[in-house]
Image (cartoon, rainbow, N blue to C red; front, side):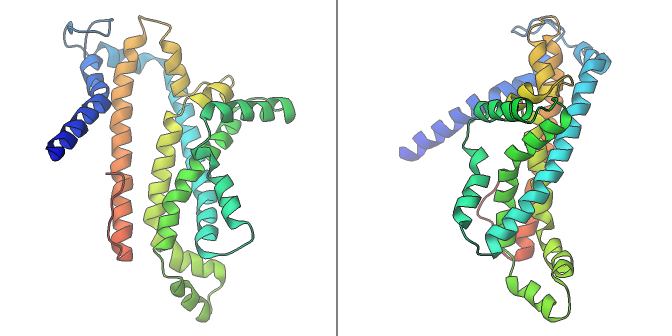
Length: 269
């Protein structure tokens, strides 16, 4: 009886969670301007409108650039933090790592206001795409650290020590021995941080300046009823892209565990 109750709860929870996403393709191909049932007919007019919307294209390019740069920066910084936290001992290690991981638990609205005040009021900077990249790096780095912590924890430190004994420098030993072993973790980190940055709205709405990102532009479309259905094909494309990135990240995560000879205890998928 308990088993059936748990299964029923799980099914209802999944339906509640994913039913709105499943409706995106239905309304994306609906010919009507009102997002409601019954559907008025099959049409690709909203995909054509999406293709012709130049302002949206600029917003998508901004989001892709911000997501790509923040993914690179957060992965590089996260790799350094994960290596230090996993392989070395230093004073106040727990406190420092806790501060780095703090964005995971802090409300984004609080972080957005704080970053806006620091950037504009204290540093007297003009809001631009690089400030947004720095902010997205800050919020995605804890995720990269969490992924790369596992990658470094699965490596035998004696491998790098053996390379040092054979005449390699610390840098060359890291590049030739450690880096290939954590490559799956790096790829997973890049993909996850890219996806998080691409979908982020709250901080972008505060720091985007005169060049809106895609989530900010989509929010603006909600004020124009006749343009709102354009969000449906865009959402369909983004959901497909997000699923693809998560599948690729999970593939490399499992590949890294298999290479390290570690039993898989569950992951993204």
